[in-house]
Image 1: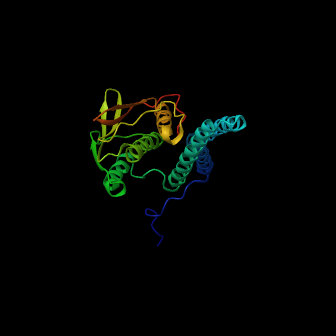
Image 2: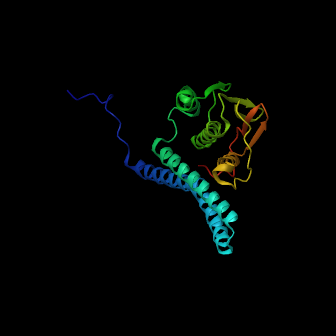
Image 3: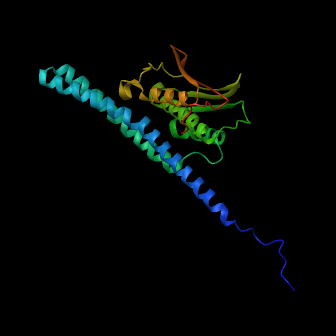
Length: 240
């Protein structure tokens, strides 16, 4: 009796192999581009800033201006501290990558562990339960939220914070707000750690999403970071 053929596992046709190799090459190219973007955002900008400050430090030392020399040394020291922190975050990022269950699961998991890790109570109001974004956009949004929450812990001295995700018009809005002290913004991110380099990086990520990031602070009202981005992926977006 001949064995039945119906349950035999399918074998990939040889003609599919070139397509699979091409898909793998594309994935590797995207991975390299993503790594290049992350290194540029996390390290290259800071290194350029430090090089500029080192030139000013050299001139101050040559002129015997101790006050200026100390200021530029302090700027470089702050920027080095920031670069070291960003490098650790970058290593952690490439080890853990994006949550395979998606952005909303990653945000929920972050919320559940936030109090134990930071001492700040975080509430997550998710008003878009069916959010569905391409992975590249999810990564950008996640790291913007991650940076905003890191600022709550480092600068705001807050006790409570709130993360809100909602749909608005033809896009989405994510807001991170806290009850801490006012955080002085440095829109251009030119003052190292003390000037919150992360704000400039968040704005760069927002622009890749085709959106915008705003920062509002008021005495007694804490800090509010708002990210808006369109639902439709911009044609000019370079991906990760």
